Length: 570
Image (cartoon, rainbow, N blue to C red; front, side, top):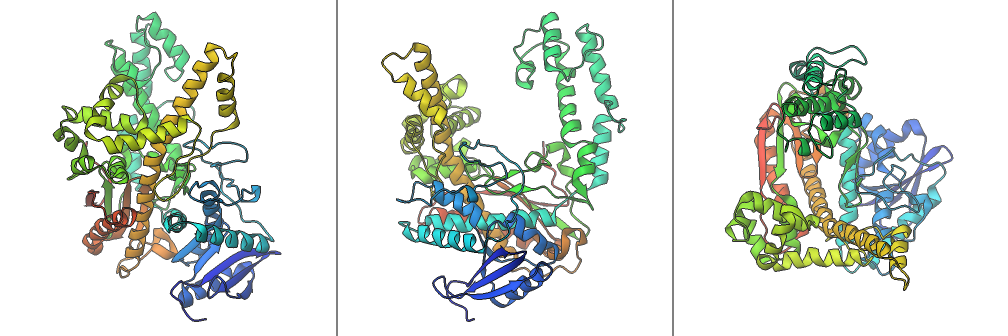
C-alpha cells in the first residue's frame, strides 16, 4: 500500500472473538482485510504503525489503546468513533446532524439516553463490544459523510483534536505522574501527625477537635458532622447559615481559627491521605484515569484519584526521576483571552497584551483595582447578577462591547431554550423535558405567580450555563490543540540516555506529557532536554492560537518552570 497525502485508515473492530483490521488506502477504496487473534493484535498493530502510520479508527480508544501501550506500541494518530459521534450528533453546525443511536452513547457517566449531562459528570470506562465490524464500519462512514457536509473544516479539526486527546489521556495514565511516596508521607506526618489506626483521627486533627469542643462548650462534638457543628455554633452565639469555610471566615470568634484549620486538614486526610497514597500511587507513579470530553463543554474530567484536584501542599511530592526533570507550564487567564479573540473585541485584546489581563482591564479604566477586574471578568463569563461581580459587570459593557455582546447573546439563547456552540462546533445540550414543561406551564393563561417565578429562575440558570459554555468550551478546544501540538513536537526529541523505567514501555526513554489540568501541563523529560521542552511548550501554544484564531493576534502567555518537583509558590 502506498502512502497518500491523507494517511491510510485502519478500521479496527471485534469479530467473533478476534480482531479485524480493514486497511483503506483512501476512504473510498476497497480495504485490505487482516484478521488477528487477541494475542497477536499488539504485534500486528506495531508493524502497521511502523510501516504506514495509519489513522486508527476504533470504537473507543479508552478500551483499545491501553493494552497496546502496555506492550510498547504507540499510535501516532487515531479517530475515536464514540467521542466523535457525540460531537457530530449534538452539533448545531450541521444541517443534518448524525442520527442519535443508543449503541453509540458513552457509558462512562458523561451521558445517558434521555438525560442531560451535567458539567462535571464522570463514571466507568467504555468496554469494547464483540461482533461489531458492520456497526463500526457504518458509523465511520456516517461520520465521514457528516464531516464532508460541514461548511468548513472546523468540525473535522475538533474531531481530530478530540481523538488525539483520547490518545494522550491513555498515554498519561500509562506513563503516570512521577510521585514521591516518601515526600507525600513526610507531608502528611508534618501536617497531621503519625498515621492513625483505622477509623481514628490523626493526632493533629484530634487535638483541634478537642479545642473546637472546648470553645463551643460541647464535649465530644464531632466537627465532621455539619448539622451537629452548626447547632453547637448557634448555641455559642455564632449565627452562621452553614459551616462553609467562606462563611466561617467572616466571623470573629475563638473557635473560627481551629475550625478552619481542622477543615483544611480533614480535607487533606480524607482526599489525599494515607489511604489515597496506598490506592493510587504504585512504583512512584500516580496514574489517574482521565475522561476526554468528560464535561459537556469539552473539558476533561477524571474517574477516581482526584487527578484534577491535587492540592497545593502536595505538589512538592510530584518529583522527577533521577536524571530527569519536570517542565510545568500554565496559561494566564485562558478563558477571558479566548473570549477576547472569539468576539474580536479590540479593546479586550489590548487588555490581554502582556502577562496579566486583569491589570490590562484596570488600565482600560473599566475598574479601579485588579481584584475588581477579576470579579468583573469572571462575573461576565459566569452570568453574575448579584454581589460584587454583579455590580461591576455593567462597567464592562461600555468598555468591551463586542465581548459582552457575545456572552449576552449566548445567555439570551439559553434562556429561550436554544443551543449555542463553541468556535469549532461543539454544541450545548438541549433543554430537558422538565425544563420545557416548566416554561410551558408558566406561559399558560392560568399560570400562577410561583410557576412564572420558577420558570424565570430556570431560564436564567440555563442562560448562565450557555453564556459560560461558549467560552469554557472554546478554551477547552484551545487546550486540546495545545496538547496535540506538544505531543507531536515531543515525538521528535531523541531518546534519553538515562531511562525512567517506571514510566512504562513506551515512555521510559522519551520526554512525555505526564499531567494535564485545563490550562496547565507537566512534561517529564530528560534533564538535558529541559530547555528544548520549554521551547516546545511555548511554540505549541503559539501554534494552537494560530490554528484556532487564524489571522487574528491575541496574547496567550505561558508561565513555564523547570524544576525537580512541581511545587508552586504561595
